[in-house]
Length: 326
Ligand code: NDP
Image 1: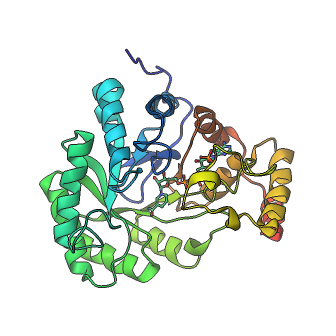
Image 2: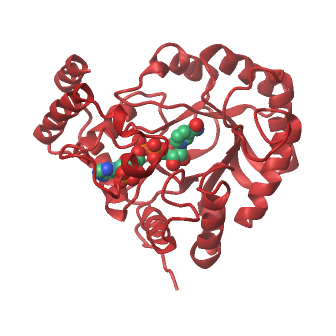
Image 3: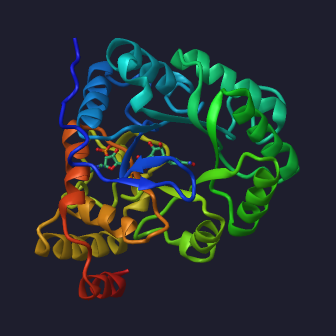
């Protein structure tokens, strides 16, 4: 029987999510890769247990995570039942809908029909009565924002989710969504955009909107999906993402990218960190960022990420050197 580490809340930092009452760990764990039905269940279980032992209270899912789609939620539900059920009130579990999930016109994008049906399916797969955060996973160019946000507000009102969030929305639609949700009495608690040293679009307006609107920000792929680690310095290992995932193709790992990675790795080493740890320190340097949402294939990667929080903040001189490389 699993007994969590009693000192699990000592090493972790918890940041307030925008102006909401919710606090999130500075590092959260996402189950996009390595928790699907084709991945070894015991490794998934070990990673989730270790994460919780290190104070990671937040686990991020989506309806389509797998493969096959839906299977990461099933894996998480099984681990919840075997290990974490007594700790449900210590956990923040999120899921999303917005990408294609089932055939026909009702299993994709942002209609009320899709969002409400999808959340019911997610709850069944995880064996939960409610999730803590439910997101619209990506903007829908055709459905009116009033409909999508109305569905999120109704979901929160129904108790099937405690907080509403949006993911990958640009600054203007984020502001409009926030206004609609606030008017409906269920403010937007959180935005989930991509952000890393290699992907800085959020600096171009989104973080300002989030700061002004009081919306929290959990940034996905802070390690640029493995690139901002030491993993590919000697080529692509067979057990790594670029060797097996359609989302990171070996062609993305160009000589130019690797030249930057090599130089960034030197800066990280000079400050006594791994590159993956410096990448986490770097996204967390922005006050608007509530949490760095990492992925992992091994327990040791989660340990590295949490240890990054012990490092001193990046100095002005280090930030300048990083900027020159980028
Ligand atoms: P990261 O950028 O953190 O990449 C994670 C990968 O980096 C791991 O799988 C591992 O690669 C490698 N890695 C992690 N730690 C280390 C380490 N210490 N040393 C060496 N390599 C390391 O994030 P992800 O791209 O995985 O995304 C994280 C989460 O964000 C997802 O699980 C999901 O919850 C969310 N997300 C949300 C999206 C959205 O649209 N809202 C889109 C994408 C992600 P390897 O597996 O090769 O070992």
